[in-house]
Length: 308
Image (cartoon, rainbow, N blue to C red):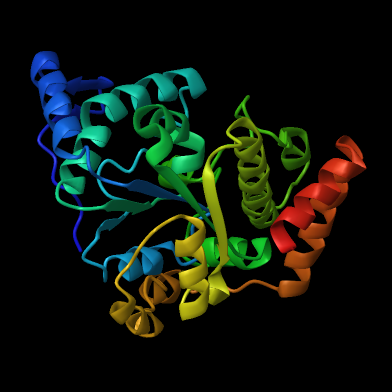
């Protein structure tokens, strides 16, 4: 499995994409015709650090799929320090001129396209839904927020401290956040506690956005699976049935051997440890803040959605 190729150059410094508008539009029309018989375009809704690369490898086993993990362009928060509007405008260009073209190109002669990419929900879900309409399928992957935060921290993803981390992890200052906690974060003096609280919030924010997305698009075909069940044949079969996906039954037994992207090299490089009791304390403080600033029904619904 490999990332899709690209032929259009992105000039990040000047926020421009070098392309020929006529050629791109013609190619898109041609690809619409070539992929007319495809049946589904599946994206993951997730936090990251929850097994989505394994999922891409699992669906890559099946001949019916074009399956990728975070293929080019990844659709990051390319300019996290320049405001939401600037980033969204640029993402719209990247989508229309590169991303959708690559997806359709990879979908030729395939029944399904699968992409695991935790940037889907905040950065290009609306664009994808408008483009692919009733072909869209959503696979939500859930993992305990404490485990996700711990995993990100141990591989050196520290939002608020470096540009790269800010490209991957939502900012607490984004005006479109469902859960606004910038005041809470700014009161934390200890840098490590601030990073961990940010990562914990990010997990809850992603679930809050998933709830909102399901409310806004009630007809979306949607299924959920937990990280611990990714190598469970029966769980994968259930998800495929719920997403109306047909796969080669003889390949299902191979999913039990797939484990990847544990990033052990990064964990060894950063050599970071976390006091679990401290992490639990920060999580409780964060949930208390959310509970104090939002309705009881909101926090109860959010926790039920994550843990049920």
